[in-house]
Length: 122
Image 1 (cartoon, rainbow, N blue to C red):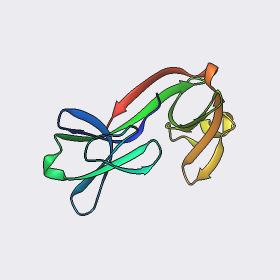
Image 2: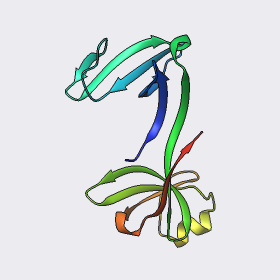
Image 3: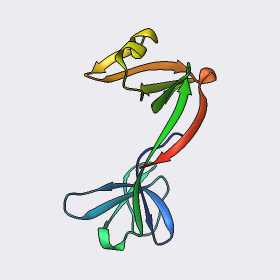
């Protein structure tokens, strides 16, 4: 599974999360859970005070492609959307990456070419 976003531990369980500016944490789950409201099929949310959250951290999935480090930012039908993490424009250009913004380079890579997939916690 490719994860990129906040995770919160609440009541001993891990949830996708979104911290709010008001100190509250929005918790998300794909299945009906007591106290969670349905936002749409397969997406449920509960808002809790930040003080009730045992842990809040950010996770991203990284990989190697063509010998360079990338962050996986999406997936579709056997392809992964990867963002170059090396920060060197000449390397990004050599790899034929698309420049999305200043210093941001991405491409679609065949999943079969991706190596060393791991989660990093920030």
